[in-house]
Image (tube, rainbow, N blue to C red; front, top):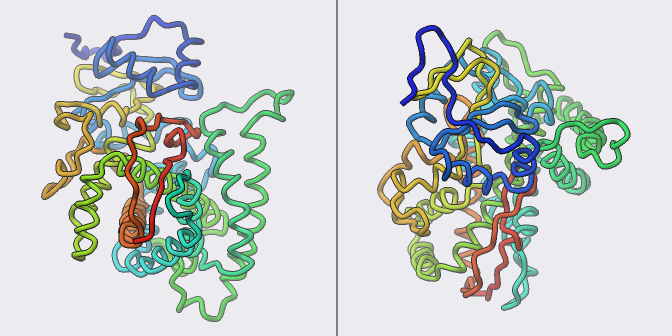
Length: 435
């Protein structure tokens, strides 16, 4: 066993002999399969050299993940991160005291009583979207789920209605789609700008910033601002500990972060949930009985199991900024990224018994273990986790109350990379009948 030396000399996990170009191709084409191959070959920690992220250590050990997420100022957010896409003022880009201050400011509107006030909004959007669903005809659920979560977040964040809602509804989906691609591709040389998602995202983001800047100014002038409950209004009323408000640029970038991080990932998890439930009619029967009885525990456990078995985001990471980081038996030098493979960790039989089974009962009557990481971990755990969980819970409750979800014998849908998020390859196809 290798042990970190007192001299500070690096002791890295096994390095793959696969050429860097092939590593890059494997990571781009199928990161999950590539990491699984290296895990099977080298164990729960290995060293790679990846496009975008550079020299990196990938881990799939719960104890090392806990060490990483509690490493304090020895690490920063993985580099590069979504701050490259969402802006230098977004929470993804902030570090240290600035990150803590921003997180403290944004936590209240995304937790507790404010979230409960949005539940009826979710019900309304689910029923408006599902009113036109065909009876007994199979269709992909991901696009309807995208529309539901987009409308919910737009109304909750902006209080948008009418023409404002329509404009944002047209603007955000293509921006999120190209931004998700840009996050996994380094900026291309100028001659390739026509195919560079980074360039396309920059154009769409400029359009977004211009329009949202107008909405921010309009909200500031609203005589009813103090009575408004949307997140934009709460941001405008909030101040840091020193009494200073958020700037318009900070607000615009945090709103983009909420839209990008909260809209696509929640919708994709819901599509995976429906894909899983169609193949487990026994789980559906239990869920329907619980909905009819007014309960929620089994539904909550089912959501946790969907997130374990089909994590939409498959890794979380940190960047070593100290001279070195001791992690388990390894000593990782400054400048390396450490990536926690959430997908591998969720498939670890030492953490989750028989992980190949879809079994919500594993989460009944117990909190998820520290190895359950669909929202990341530590001080950078997704700040919108409670909002997303509420949205998934209310959406499933409403659909199960209103529709019979028809089972299928089709094979499970494969994983499909949309850039940052992994979706069901056929869109989470469902067929329903009104109840």
